[in-house]
Image: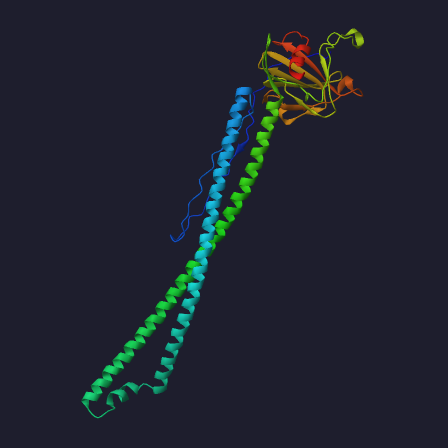
Length: 360
């Protein structure tokens, strides 16, 4: 049996999976386009569960995350509506610009024709107009006519200028709308990508929680009180009560060998903290779990550690902490976990009854 002296755990860290799609819409400069801004999606943290009741709470939070994603999807659809309204307005502005361009061109042509007429008649045209005729009355009528022509020319010029100003304003407005529309499309694509990513992670997290819950059993028997999980998947493993079986060098077996395929996941036996790693010629790659039930559990002959098997990590029963292997003096034999149990950090006891209550 490898020497094993449980030590105090490091500071536990609680892994969190934070989700949220935080979106922002650009403020539209012109009031013609109605913008309903997206608000930040609440971040929903799903901590590693510490027991059955906490797992239920985590599932509730995962459900809330799905609701938040549904709300975000609704906001995305509103954004798509804004884009379509902006596209419609932009088409209308483009049509209006084309109409104003045609109007301005016609007025310009008319003014150019009038200017050619005045140039061809010369600067004495006005005087000739006033002096022509048989008498003063006719001259007065012709003066009134000249004033009317001048007023008409002035009005035509003003109309042409107004058409050009309207055209320039419409073109500018259309360019602003086109810029805003491009921004909306970029935002929509970002929101959609964020939603897809958050939904994938949410579903993965929920599936992981459900897998952990499926491995857990609540045990209420004598000194075994709490939530427990078989160190290997129940359908992959087998073991017997081998406590006290003889070993080389006059030793006796001080644990239970939990047999299973090479490299399959190894799980936390109960809620607690990964308190120590070790690696020795006899035990190979090893891990200590200080359980919330007051016992320390020793796993050895491992192939390696999982990310959640880091020292100082708080884990829930059934969380993946390592991989099954044959390191140490088990090299070349069937892969298995040598599993020991130390109540209160004291002397080892036979773990078989505790394992059998969970794994069988």
